[in-house]
Length: 142
Image 1 (cartoon, rainbow, N blue to C red):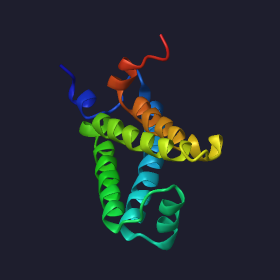
Image 2: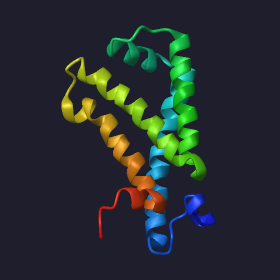
Image 3: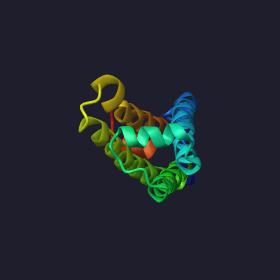
């Protein structure tokens, strides 16, 4: 059974306070970006409509609203320590769709296609640093 600290996603002493803060900063950056993107899909300024059209998706306000709500819900799950792993999994799926959308158009690899991958590394990297359970599942050191 996990201790209260492990269950809440707090880094153990072995990981140390520095690891926890690195994880919080990385996760905070990911949360800020995803939340902004989700809100923009709800507000639907012209730049979002143009971007949606540019990647070949039909511009339907209901679809954009649904995507925004899905992204905000997944981000909220990621932000909460007890549901952070579920949120990271959902965000990974969402970002995979973004990568596929850009790849099918032949967009530039490093800037467009892989941007979702970069965000995925930010999401999982933040979680790895702030949650000892994730470090135990993905041990990059002895």
